Image (tube, rainbow over all chains, first blue to last red; front, side, top):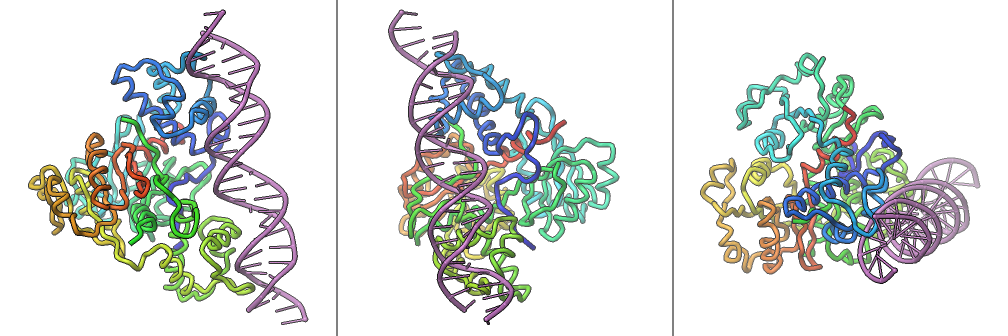
Length: 222
Length: 222
DNA sequence: TAGATTGTTAATCGATTAACAATC
DNA sequence: TAGATTGTTAATCGATTAACAATC
């Protein structure tokens, strides 16, 4: 019924150290990626100024973001690329395996499963779930197993599932989110236009492709 | 090479009236959507407090956002749902047809074309483009025409194309963005992890699904 | 050492929230 | 009229940027 913002993460942000803004975490991923590509180019050292320039942000912001987690740089020299990358990957838990399921193997869901590219290293797509698993299987061009949503509890009990990608119709989203929370799933990547009411420990991130286009079209003077 | 933030819109924000923050536009779409669903429920009037409650935001913020564009409410009564919806749709230009093309009909591109759901009312998907249109056609389950990227100029000249959805490999993104700008395309919905250097008049919105998952996984304590 | 660049504190900027007179 | 709710100004909050002593 009610609609939802598209980017912010809901839930309790008091995670780990203390009150790290979601915007900082987002940039941390960008730093980590850039450092990886710098490593490929055999660049061993980089300053906050250069890091910022390449990402279109302020040097002070780069240093302040990193300062949330410790001191990684060397005054007068900058940051060692490989070292900083490892540190950031550790903070982002990119080393540990993240187990993912996808619920709702309809148009978008099957597209995402077939795409696969949004699952990079460190992510494992375990299973798909759909109200009609037979029809769903025919939509997917991948070997992934697809179960009935009725079997959600049966499948997940005793299993570690970290993130659920939710691509069900909007009016089914809340009920499934509640079940996921009960099963210990810790985060939802929500592609439905529904605001989800979930426990505080749970994290929800909204992605609304229609909204992105709608917003862009505002800037289009026709 | 360098990576990019995932949500902000680049380019000159001095659009129309004066300096409307991108965050306000984003919320405007949410208001418009909610009002639409209220209209279906035959709710004719709503206060900023109730509007805010349903969207999880502050009543003052709702009023302040709307104040950017004029005075739409009635003191003591609130806002007339149908009227406000019309006004917001006008501001968002939801009435005028927005013409869209998609470039890069690979895994993600074909998934999005097949999905279709991210194109709501008011959007027309004209054509797809790919370096290998024959292979691309076999990937897409829709009647949309797919041309060679070589024919981009030939096809677009004299045509009004408002938004291009960019789902090409990262290293091809900048060159195509430059060509699109030259052809008068006004906005890019960029699904590649490349920061695009485009003219100030052009708007770019980044959507990075891998980044969304990566960010979420930070909050997953495993 | 001289030059460069960090980590961090202080200043600035912008966005969100509160308060309230105006008004239906 | 009394009650409710707007539009808008002022206060608060948080995030970004500037500045600079510490330090390699």
